[in-house]
Length: 85
Figure (cartoon, rainbow, N blue to C red):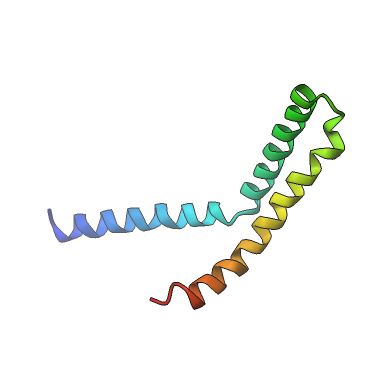
């Protein structure tokens, strides 16, 4: 394998990693996860528990939103004090 081929493979992998990282931190992903969390809990409450779910299902969705907003802060603390590389 030539050096140019190896560099091309590394650059392609770096682009994939950057895209994955951008997706993981994007608002699009967070909003989609909130919508899916809300829908799953609402359907569960409607058909399994048998209560009116539309207000009650917002609690886990907002909890998920709060967790996604605070995770970068916790990650910073973790990398600073635990993952000392």
